[in-house]
Amino acid sequence: MSFVGRMRELAAARRELETRGLLVVSGGPDSDRSAFLDAVAREVADEAGLAVYRLQVADPGDRPGEAGRTPDEVAETVVEACWGGFVVHPCVVVVDGVPAGTAGGIPAGTADGVCAKAADGSLLAELISAFAESESFLLVGSTDAREDAAALPLDRCADGWALLTRAAVHCDRGDPRAAGPLLRRAVEAHQVAGDRRGEAWAVFLYGRMCRLRGRAEDARRLLHAARETFRAIGETPGVAWAGGELARLATGSGTPDPDALAEARRLHERAGDRRGAAWAHLWWTVARADEPGFPWQKEFANVQSRFHEVSDRLGTAWTLHHHALTLARTDGTDGVNGTGGTGGTDRTDERRREADRLFEGALALFEEADCPHGRAWTMLEYALRSPAHRFLNGEWAAEIRHVFHGIGDEAGEAWVDLAEAGPSPGGEPPYELACRYPAALLDTLGWTEAGEPLIPRAARDTQPEPRADFPRPGDRDRPDDSRAHVRLTLLDDVPVPDVPARIALQVVPGPGHPWSTAPLPPLTARATSLGHAEIDPAHGVPADGAEFRFTPHRPGSHRLRFTVEDPVTGTVLQQVEAEIDVVPSDPGPHRPTAPAPRPSAWRA
Image 1: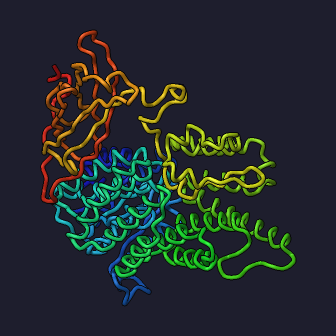
Image 2 (image 1 turned 180 degrees about the vertical axis):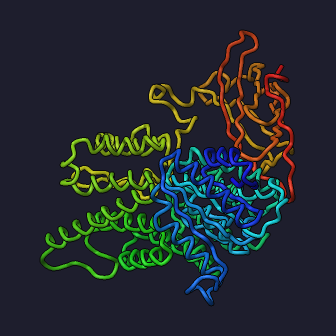
């Protein structure tokens, strides 16, 4: 993401811009550096047909009206100017004169609130965070740096934090598909830089991504690991964020844990993290919103004020969404005052109009924040709660399904299908939902008298994929106890790079299967690694207790394939794939190991 160079590297700088959309130049006299930035800006602007804007960062007191201002105050003015329009409208932005020393620490962050700054309050960090997902080009010139500054350490450190920010933005948009590769690259960058704090945030975000994708056990393990590292290095905001995400896991399983969310909020407030405290307050309010007597009107108003104070549009949008949802679903009480007496119909109409206003406000903010996940859910709930709005557009379901499809959210599409189809005669949830969500969560699904679904709030917190072991509709006539299953068990805790972890494979016949009353035949289980890892031995015999040693060579997600065969006939009986998340090992500087040979090179 960064580039250290002079005029003669203009072509390389342009390639950097085209590839990453960001450029950082340090070293050299002011005139040379500024000329270089201007040349790059003109070339990029002419090619892309964009306007060019230039901002000069002056030392405090160098310009009229800036006397007595601190460097942080000057920096905030620059960042606010960028957020004011440059991030939204594509253009080329040149920020010259960034003080030396600010290029070495990009602050940890997610777009929904982890914004702990680097120790030096880096202006460069703020700029890169602001432009991470923008369509604009950002060119930054850093002053007073040594001309012979090495490119690699700056590049790797800056990349790590910027990659984390980009991954967080993908998760906030509800599109986690692109977050995994970014996080794996971020881990490597932080390991090369010896940045333990950066590694901890990468593991945290990986856990958050797993939660969003419905992989609860992986998310729980990674978030616990991140929280322990945060505690070890004294990163209180990280401890609070990890605690909040772990509490959201409980909510996703249908058993909210408001006490854990309240504790996360207290930790955020103790650390001075106002944005984090606002998000924890929102999650706590949502977890309790359906409790009888809970003052949700007051709490949603308080949360909205918190988000306004920190200019968090995404947080405000989700607050409006859940406030509208509560208004539309409650019986007229706000947890403080009842609505007894006459005029109930008028009050109901008034509440419906207020809910419509809040849904419309949330929809506008989700569109501004480019969050299709929130936009799709708000469109769906607005259509369900406002029949007039829905019937104005006969293609309402197709439109919402299209938005869900754009981010690969098949679970969201399944909820739209349910809203169109209505309740099933037997009261059972459809297969596409049953194979993705815990039964405890689906048990909270309700229906209005008009036949509209009351979708559990926690359903919008995840985009779960179908469970591989869930019986397909065609298997329903076949008793489950007549089948044999492959069971994989990880025997060692938390796999780390270059350390073998044991995996046990069992073939478990159901009580109605012929093998349940006779010894297992001499089946063969063949193991294959589909990534940078080794697995040994290549074959095992389940009847003898097949055990494999899995040795990954880098952090991230690793896929393994196990094929169970009948060696007598050569028939493949079953093939399963498992995905194992490997967390970074100890925090010291890490030199990446050479990739393992491809499985085909050593497979028997």
